[in-house]
Amino acid sequence: MDVQRDVIEIIATKLKRGAGTITAESKLSEIGFDSFDVVEVVFAIEEKFGIDVPYNANTAAGSLEFETVSQVVAAVEGAIAARRPAA
Amino acid sequence: MRRVVITGIGLATPLGHSVGTFWATLVSGQSAIGPITGIPTAGLRTSIAAEIKDFDPSRHFAPSQLALLDRFAQLGVVAARSALADAGLTHVPHDAARTATIIGSGVGGQITQDEAYWRVYGEKAARVHPFTIPRLMLSAAASHITMDLGLTGPAFAVASACASATHAIGLAFHVVRDGTVERAVTGGTEACLAFGTMKGWEALRVMADDTCRPFARGRRGMVLGEGAAMFVLEPEAAAVARGARVYAELAGFGMTADAGDIIQPSLAGISGAMRAALADARLAPEDIDYVNAHGTGTQANDAIETQALHVVFGDYARRLLVSSTKSMHGHALGAAGGIELAATVLALGAGIAPPTANHTEADPACDLDYVPNVSRAHTIRAAMSNSFAFGGLNAVLIVRRR
Image (tube, rainbow over all chains, first blue to last red):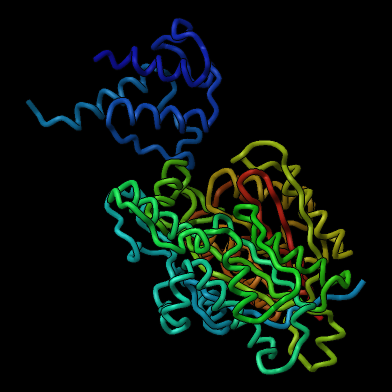
């Protein structure tokens, strides 16, 4: 599973951009996200990977937790790892 | 135009079912927000709400009647009966054909809808309850109130999400004021604590998981409530003529649409509604002493409502007492404006501003006097109650002492 490719695909679809225009280093604030784009992308990511992302629009304001695409990818990978029992 | 007064209040709320209990609880600053007990919470991220825990429908309705009544209609009918009794109109003849029934609700029979969908999608049942449709329709509460109280004048439901009750009361106010009717039973009712509805709110990512802390730093969002609040409105002259007890004059109503975002409130829209209400009441900003804020506890609402109060009230804003009683009764959506108008009217009568509970730490973006945690005695000549709905539908009511 290529988490980064899938996350970029989800974001590109939501923002109606070509996936090629978004990289791991892209900043969410610079590729046209508003807060309710985030809510929809979080939903799509949860559905795609079967994980829970504890995102609250009220506490995320000003947070740098998800500044770039690569940080979203890292969080998704972390959540996937946490979901699986240790090998 | 005629002056319109409030002569009856009927309540079914998490803070009590009588005017006295509701007001005493509100003034004490006790919050009804707590762990949800009425529905299973497994699978819910947010498992807190302000529930009505002491409502036994069988005390109020015969079994045959109950089959037709979603909880939102039950609460609405019980509150409407109380309002009429409170106005002293239960056992005296009144012109039922000239009494309007205008009832706000955000969604209608959400519990009925949730149960019906669970049956067909979850349990793969072949059929749902035969009265599913008459129970869930948004106007069911309005219909049952007319049937229960025998009111045959203009009657309908009003929907504007979280401003529904306020729009309903405002419309009722205007039709009494302009002489279309001689009296109105009006308010709002909502029973939204259904599993599917809760999942919907959870998905929007605006719900607090701790409690509702309006205007406070670190607030984490909304907490749902439920309930109903109904009022009897009549011309001042008629109320005086029959020796009715008068709570307050309903003096002004203002409404606007943001025509902007479906979720984010707009400064122009909500300040416009407050100004329109002041103009309708022919009051200056300095005539208002207390504002019952929309104050949902979301980052967006509380900051922009604060800005709008600065815009409308100017330097005087710092002398206003502003509180969000949602911190105690939760956000009852389409009933919220009714429950909050009751709080506003009772505050005016008592000369006490109820507090904003759970206000642990000040937020620099919210720099007014929110009456944190402890109610305050204060002369209240006139007061404003704000309701700003998702979808940018804003409604503001003003009451005045008489």
